[in-house]
Length: 397
Image (cartoon, rainbow, N blue to C red; front, side, top):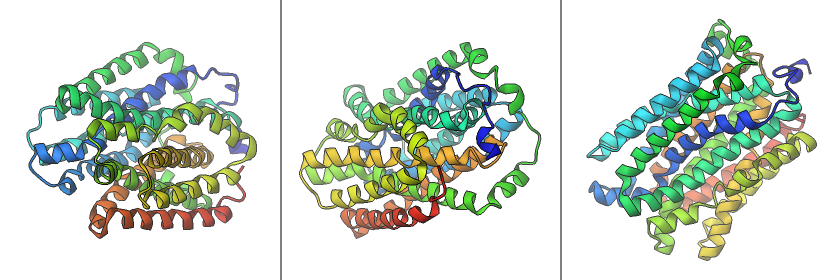
């Protein structure tokens, strides 16, 4: 139980405002990460290739992101949270701007890979900072804000990306996101002392990263949790990456209409994230995680039935709610695995984004069996995981 009291022992009354400020970086990164989902049909026409070929821009970005989250988060234990967040946010802006100048799909895939690598330090390092700053009994609230920003970026990225593209083109979309990222970087820089002063000195360690990872993964509880992070990430990314095409194929929507349809994915987290975090703090993660996983599975199985357009809009929002009832709770559990929170949360982000990349890649590879059938396979898989989670997380609070 001693670990539950570490990380912010004297910070119980610290304001949540710094969480909102740092979460802006995650918001814009996820905005950029998922703003291309409704653009796949349009980009395939512009580059003269198939939707399946263009769809690889998503796993390229997500795999690059996932592989390097582990590196950045561990380095933040050694060099400090603020330096890693600043460096990663600048790299994100540079590569996002560069993407506006590509003239072929393969160039875009490559730059999306580099963008993922550059952006990978912001989210996991922010989670580490939350673990440093807030005690466990308040961590759910802080992580609810963080994941709400992540969900909001996902939702508004899909919608706004489609709208901006329809008005001024996708090149200006990437350039505008890079400019907003620089503004957020400047804001964090101005607030650096207020945000990091309490934790920067104690965050730095010089332990061997690989030994720290080995120590964390030696516990069965940690291995089981990271597996669920990976699997849940595979599920949600695979489904979301193809939702745009789902609405295009089944309902004939254009890019902007697809964006509006995807807006529901993120709204629950954006509006309810802090509340859901408080519920987890109060009632226990062991009760809520199986509900979130089950909701996700049932939602996707219903989507595969090609119901009315209005019903599909509602189901997209419920799918997002399933994510909000599971992933922030995994993150809170992960922060208890080790005093080296950078390494622990780096493994979390690594598992999540490798799952994101693999999930979208696998669905792209199996989509030839039919999108509805692929959705059904994913839905059955997450329902099995939901049943098993009742036992796996029964001792979590």
